[in-house]
Image (cartoon, rainbow, N blue to C red):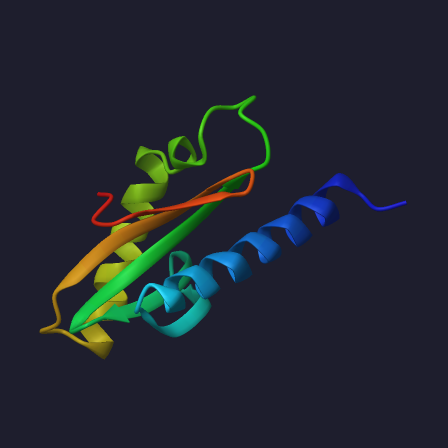
Length: 116
């Protein structure tokens, strides 16, 4: 019998895979997935033209806890900003940066550009 965390982990990987495919179809160039950096992990780091985009993926199978976008709370946004600033300072200090969220609600995928 699988544990709930293993099941949730698998669902998370599947959601991230769907999100990356969606981003690539939308014209993004994915440069890193599940990038582990000091201070946290970024689901995807992409280029949208010359803009360095840090993407958070949130998946919700039901609306019981609200829409997926609601899962990107103030604490998560703050952590992503800090991690992104450190990454950009080293990799592309002059590049404009943006934060996008891919929200997966059931079978619906929504890209929130410049989400925060």
